[in-house]
Amino acid sequence: MEAYIENRIEKAEKLREMGLNPYGESLSNTIALKRVVDNFSEDRENVKVRCAGRITTMRPHGKAAFFHIKDWSGKLQVYVKLDRIGKEKFEIFKLLDLGDIIGIEGEVFKTRTGEITVFADNIIVLSKALLPPPEKWHGLKDVEIRYRKRYLDLFSNDKVMDVFLKRSNILRSIRTFLDEKQFIEVDTPMMQPIPGGAEARPFITHHNVLDMDLYLRIAPELYLKRLLVGGMERIYEINRNFRNEGISTRHNPEFTMIELYQAYSDYVGMMELTESLVASLVKGLYGKYEINYGNDILDMTPPWRKSTFSELLGEYASVELADEKGLRKRGQELGIEIEGVHKDIIAQKIFEQTVEKELWNPTFVLDYPITICPLTKACHDNPNLAQRFELYIATMEIANSYSELNEPIEQSRRFHEQAEGVDSDGKIDEDFLESLKYGMPPAGGLGIGIDRLVMILTNSPSIRDVILFPLLRKQC
Image (cartoon, rainbow, N blue to C red):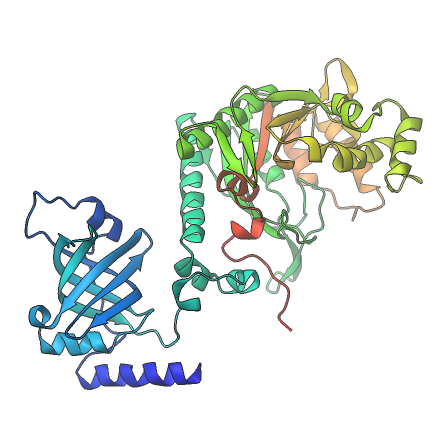
């Protein structure tokens, strides 16, 4: 590797001796390489373009050469010939290597083999690479290196670049969808004096000037609800959350979600909105509702399946939610801790082990036990159940929604009850409880995990494949 670097440094010095700074030029008014190819027409002659990209292949032939350059839109062949470009520019070309970033000016034509090509009149050196690209452009294969050196992964693996461009388009489409429904985008604090809105272990930091501990947010929920109180009736935030918990193919301690609230709605309205939003994303990306995920097909055709938490426990775990004795017995069979644990917590853990793996096509799971839903209204016909749904796709929880509890006294009771729990730090957001006393309209709330949704929409097996810089263990 040292020999590669030394050789390339020597070439950079030769460029300087020729009066060129191998890192000093800029190039404006370039055209994307894909547009050069797409816009080509044999009916139009002498069309000249200016473009830029990274050199990916080189085929020298004495006083001429073919090579390819690549940008984030695609790749393009370039033909350089001594007679056309002149001796000085051809000498510059001979000092180029794979991985170098260059600008090209020239005329577009089609070769005898049918490939759209630029016949170079000028070559501009934009950045001399001192290291060769990985595996000579056969793609970076080592998964660990791919995640640690995402910059190599992006320019050497076309599929990886495509995933992240799709992710950007998905976020843009979500914003457009919600904007058209009169939602507004807001921002809430990422550092909070009291972590709230979800049950999770937070990251702790310290503000030196104020001499106070703060928490990286685990959810934006309680701040967004304050905005409902303030009269902002349709709001959403595409937000970064942080949970000091495990790492897996489905979990990253730093993740992206969208959380939204609509005044005067409920979880039924959120179900309709969720199905419409996700189905429109699928149709927009693929023009159909059946898509590949892994080695199987996901059928995203609306309307989606709706079943209650209790019904699914009976179907896949052969136990009834109301049967405490049966739940404890089934939990024990599955190796779940049952001593001193509330039956609804046991039911939730049974659900995770037995039901989730069966939920392949989109399924709305409705009406969870109220004891595990401290921010949710109770069902009208059963006070032991909450007006809540979770959406599962490809065995993963993708979305979570409530009919939001807006009764201040009941919310206070539940918070204090939760604060007395074994795993609680005892902290209660009293300001949020005070805000409810001023009146929060009835509302539906919805949270969608963006990273998992992108996994499904891009057929990616791991959450690390859709996060540009996932958290990784220290290198030994």
